[in-house]
Length: 399
Image 1 (tube, rainbow, N blue to C red):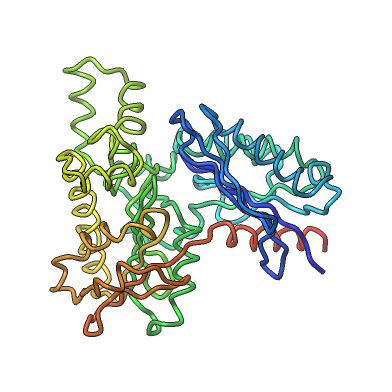
Image 2: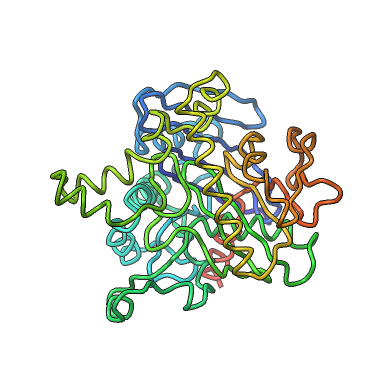
């Protein structure tokens, strides 16, 4: 028996969606509203009846989701009132704090807890929550399911999870490394694991508007570049990544910034946007190719930061068997992949430049024949991973 599952994956500047027939995992339709909040939001919709795109102007997440729901209703009349059997809607939720270690039904108590965690993921949790609330209105018969990015990283050992802060901040307030993009890291690793030795040591790189690196040993996350909030680590679209925290004190005490100003600066005005004026990597890559010095330097800085994390995680795992590139930038920017892998010969990383420039399947090897470390471009599918979780929970609740 086929069951329809709708998946909503709300990022900081995008809203992906996919309607699937489960358990066959056949896509009915899918698409994305991208560049949300930039004044040039674009909706792309794909179905067996054809593909189309529509400019949504200055649409935010709410307006984009409303248009997606309308398009689903046009594709399958009756969808919005549940007549076409959408059994569950799986939602990506970025931060689950210490409260959620697995997938849950998004009831009123869960929604309130997601709301309370919004301060820890201000670019994501509010949009995740809004998506659930709107879905309850559009699809009242469907089970709303929350799948947390942080769940995969619950295996990070204490020595990597704790900060060198007073113990009560960890025990009483839960200040620790949580990790993010876990749904993506877990999924892409599952695709590559059969190609690697048992207990393989892998660095997985999720590179999009938000970026993260995960050290995975034997299928378990043992360290991760994002921490208490999804703001440190790698350079991101509008987030700074790693900085000296003394800069915060300087901004407040010497330059007169309020704490709200600092939060806005580090989350919404820094990263690639702060370096170049562009938050979309495609614009930066194009600018670098055309000789824009700021774009060229930003590309080099992003690659350099990624390279440092690869080296650190190879040391932490006492070896390295594979590097995975995934998500929008990781899958589509051969330029960044080449820059990251350049001069990693000491680790045994050697890229095949021709393969790196080619498009491949879901798992595309791009390492040279004599590379000791295998390098893959892996097409992530967070929506499919979320759909599997939503179907599992829906079946459990039906008994």
